Image (tube, rainbow, N blue to C red; front, side, top):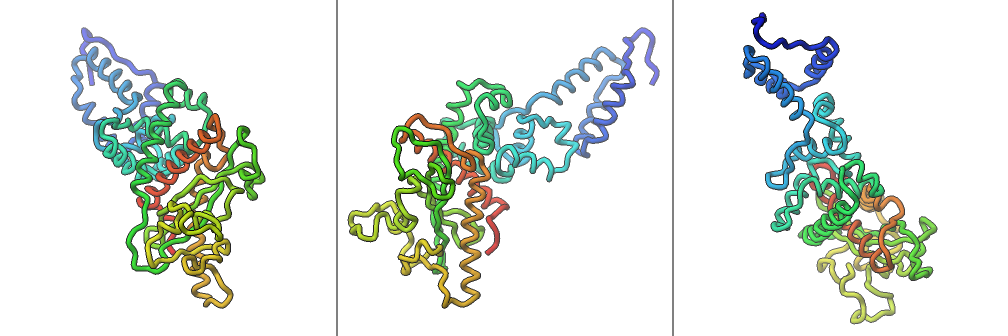
Amino acid sequence: EDVDNNKESFSIENEELDRTTKMLQHLNKDKLQKVQQFIKSLDSTNMAELSKKVRNYEKEKTSPPMDLSQQSITPSDVLSLGLNYVGFDYRRQASASEDLNIRRFISFYGAPPQALAPLFKDIREMFQKERPACRDLLITCNWLKGYDLMHVLEGRWGYCEDYLRPIIKRCQGMMQALRRRKMKFVKSKALVIGNIDTVSFMVQEFRNDPSAKWFDQKSKSAGLKYETCVGTDEPAKQVWLRGPIPCGEQADITVFRGGNEDTPIEERDKNALYFQMPEGKQFGGDSAYSGEPERVIVTMPEMKKRDIKWLGRLKARGETLHARLKNFRVLGTRFRHGTGTKDKMDQHQMATESVSLIVLYDCENGRPLFDQ
């Protein structure tokens, strides 16, 4: 289009034109329509205003999105916001497929946005006064997934250590509270309602309380273990978590009973699964639970092949759960936080319950452990 000589000239260098053309080629249909609408709205007779609008558009394109603390959270919002925070701007998101963006998101946060969006929504509904920002919850998930040093998080998120530490601890406390409300047994018509097992996690040495009770036979170092149960109903998900317990202090069946075989029923720990399991139901388990045949079914040579295979798949669900938990580096590597024995156990418990909650929502929203 010709422009009058008395109006301000507006030129674009060839290099800038090529860059803009490539960017437009990678835009999806919706974003391209927005750009077309933007161009139509321009006043071609006012070049000064045109330059101002272009600068505003470039600023809006590279600026972070509005935080979602005061509005509804959708998976697409969480996906876009989460990727933008860790370095994938809108141009890079638009040039990639949705599947690739979701894989990128899982690499940083441990679960897809389809799982984290309802989790964040439930946390904000449960804590109406605090209403944590979506950004703070994403920071917490990123820390649980990568277990990075605070200096790494400072560079990635742009906040100092004095801000990040209390935010992560506060959000973990909210996740812990929600986990205790949400994770529970469901009514089932099946006789065997789940598979029980224990999982151990590595921790740094308890120097204030040196003892062989912390020794973990699997890692040959200090460790804490938790009792877990995966339900038989679909979708397959975790329905029980108890711990932490020193790895070398109690056998698996002792944890289940709440005391030794010689311990009277009245003196056993009533928080044990032995006392919490629904009446008339049974669990599947490995040979470590063979001492409780009335409550735990274990594989026996005289069983039918069909039953042996069914129990094997049931136990494999528990191993899959443990692998999902350890996929978060806060549990998959040696835990280093805590200033004393009690503080270290409390912080490890909070991290374990937070990760269990994320995996629980992941199982409920499209990624169950696997079909039985």
